[in-house]
Each structure stands twice: as structure tokens, then as C-alpha cells.
Length: 396
Image (cartoon, one colour):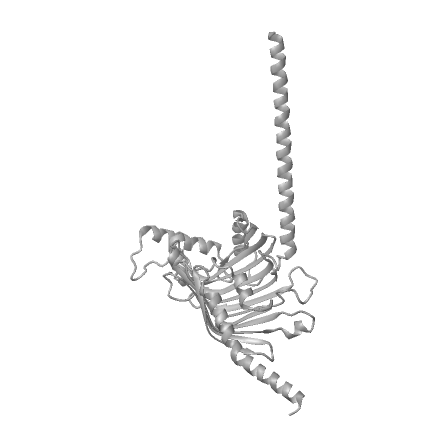
């Protein structure tokens, strides 16, 4: 047997052995890595590796909270594909892409730590870096599910999203674009508990602890009767029928944001003279009667809708809005021009940048006023001291 043939056979044998043993070592590494993540722990059932294509597959990944009251795992993904992004490799960048199939996220909100499950205790950036051997430039999820348990704790109201599709591209800015928001993000899903659908589209800059973005978000045709727990708690009314759609545009730069929410109700009915099977209190009876009358006055008769536009401005920690624009929006929809469920296209990323500049100007003016006031105080103090010295000399 020729020496070259022996070398080739040896290489083939080594590759076969590596192919057989490598998944075992990777599986052990992943499970050891996720065994202790503070208040969470994780487990992977199996790993499959393709050496030729430079990809591997994680099967049945689960992350759950330790000593929590939540039965469902925080994260469950039956299959994750991880591979090299070849089109980026041709551009000289070694980055990867991740595709998750039927992932499930289960959030639970509560003041009780054992009944809370939000994942905020984990350093997800570090975990992803440890699991994935290269940086990720694209992330996608298909047929996902997100459960937000006890989202509104006062009413124990849950929210679920199903058939969630998510696609995030150019995370590492491999494709150089002449824009501050080079990473396109799209998402969609159904809202089965409340009826309706959700759509989301954005441009983002993700290489910051607090990403910059400019998004469009819409929830269409949510059933008002599904929101009665919230309506009773915060408005002392409930709905008999109707739908609500919410449209929003928002831009954020360095933590300063600007945008709006535009809620639109259609075919809404609040008051019913007699509600069978319910012991309605007299207070709610008159509240619903007044609300129905107000809605009738402020309704756009042609489209049978009540709507307004709620402008927002501020920071992530402190977002502000004004009452008068909301009232004017209601009147405009009723008597001037009806709002639509389309985006106004009035919010741009430049607005967020200008908002930050305005904030700097305001702070500069405030500091200037503070310095002026301090100088005036020092001036008055000096005058007072001179008067005191003059009076003292007179006495002497």
C-alpha cells in the first residue's frame, strides 16, 4: 500500500472517530455549562455535528428556574440549527446564523420571587457566547410561542403569542450600510387569548448595551370582551362587544425615545340595560351608562370608531405624554378626519437624535440658570457682608 494512500486512510479514520466522539464531548460541555446558572439550570438532550458544512444541531434544549413555583420551563427549544453564514464568509467575516424551531418562552410576573420567572437574573450575552463558538450575525425563530403569565398582576391577566416568527439580520454589521440602524428585524404572531394578530418591523443598531431602534408595531382586532378584567379593574366598566387595534411608531437613540401609540376601537358597546348572570353594582351601572354616552358623542359615526393618538417622549426610565394632544386626537377622529390603522410615518430615527440634542440643550440651559443663580447668591452674600462691616465701623 502506497504511503499517500495510508495517509488518506488515516485522515479518514481520524475524521470518522472525531465525527463519532465530538458530539459526545460537546453534549457534555453544554450540559456542564448550563448545569449551574445561578437561579436557573439548563439541559440539552442531544447534539448532532456536521464537520463538512461546519454546523451543528442542538436538540431539546430546556432552561428552567430552580426552586420556583412555575411548572413550565423558562425556555424550551426542540431544535436549534447553528451554522456558518457562508455569504458573510465570502466577505471575509467568520460569523454564524442560528435558527430555532418551535421555541417556547414562559414569563411569569409576580412580587413573589418563587412565582416570578423573567430570566433577568441571567447574563444571556455570556451564555450565548459560551454555547456558540463564533459570533452570530443572523437569528431566526419559527412557529414560536411566548406566554406572559400574570402580565397585569392586579387582575391576573395573561397574554400569549403563538405562531411567532422572528428574523434578525446583520447583527454584527457584516454588511456595511450607510445607516445608523443596519440590522433589520421582523416579527409576527397571533394573539389567541385576546384575538387578533401582531406585526413588528424595525431597524436596529444592536452593538450597544441599550440598542438604538426605529420600529413599527401593530396589534390588530383584539377582542374588547377579552379585556374585561382590565376594564373592570381600571375603568369600572366592561365591554359587551367590539375590537381594538393599536398602532405604534417609536424611535430611540442613546436611551432617549420619541413616538406615539394610536388606539382605535370599532363597533364598541359598553352599556347594556340588563346583564344576565351578573350582579352589577349601581356605581358600575352609571359609569357604563356615562361611558356609553361619551363614546357615542366622540365616535366617528361613519366608521363606528373611537380613536386618538397618544404622543410619547422621554427616556426608557421616564416617558412623558400630555393630556391635551390626546383629547384633541379624540375630537379630530370624531369630527374632522377619522384615524386609520395604518402607520402615520411621522416618526424617524432623526427625531430621536433631535430629541437627545434638545435634552442636552435643556440641561445646558438648566446648568446655565443654576450658575447664574449661584453667582447672584454669592453677589448678595458679598453685599450683605459689606453692609455688616460698614455698620460695625459706624458703631466703633
